[in-house]
Length: 86
Image (cartoon, rainbow, N blue to C red):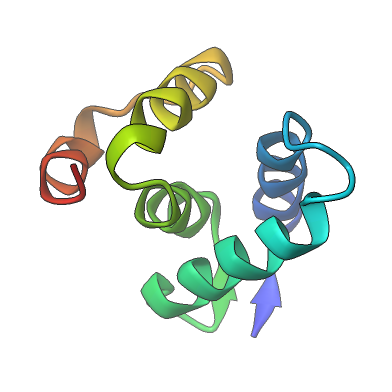
């Protein structure tokens, strides 16, 4: 599976707040979720957002939502997914 440039950049931005020593493990878990939700041959920004939401359920979701909003990502299309993963 290939990653488009926008998807790679977004994933890197989402990983920055994670402490450097925990980042490789977090990357692995988030990438696994992203690949699981990817619908095409190329991973897109939309796939990254969905995978990140799935990788951040429950108490972690508030922080994930705040970070996504700070990146100017409109979460309206993901409202049902956010409710599902609470």
